[in-house]
Length: 207
Image 1 (cartoon, rainbow, N blue to C red):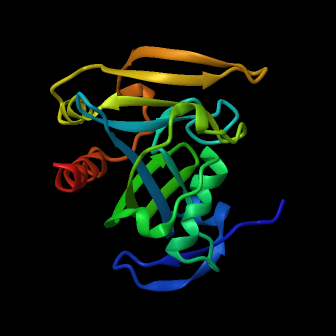
Image 2: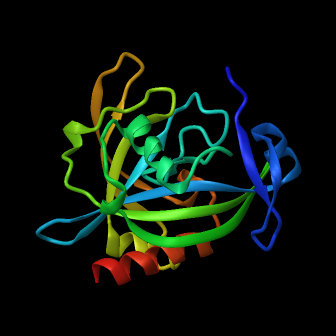
Image 3: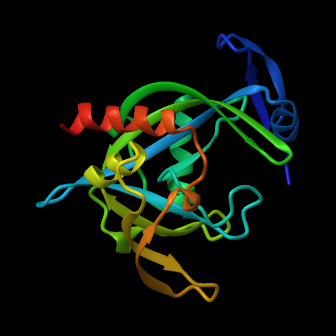
């Protein structure tokens, strides 16, 4: 497997060079990522989509996360981040369909990993039915959605659990329906401040 080379930055966002992905996470170098949140206006209310990470992922396996996201390589621009959507979800988007929320820097520290990200965050007004998603099995094990008002209340501390529904894919490739209540431990531990900034961006774009 080809080693991924990432552009690295200082704390002020100035480029300082490049480094292999493992080194970036080992030493906590700031680096760029692409985040795309799918949001959908239905008749009753607004919904936000979450991916269920594959149980085979090295980091945060089996947890709920951004609809589609990934690292930007040193030779890529932000527009190239759209490959993450196509690879992970099997749907194609045009860059001008995305709603930019800007760069949100944040940190996550896990055992053996310091993840300092400069996340290029976008929204997408979803029109794809669940049946159209073709998931990348080694990356994504399912897609669920939650009512946005509840998602906001959940991250603001007003709800202990969040109702989600959608599907997950079994080991033999079968899609099964998901409808359950999840708590904070079911989510990738992005900063709460990150989630709140995304929520504020959705409110501004879809309010």
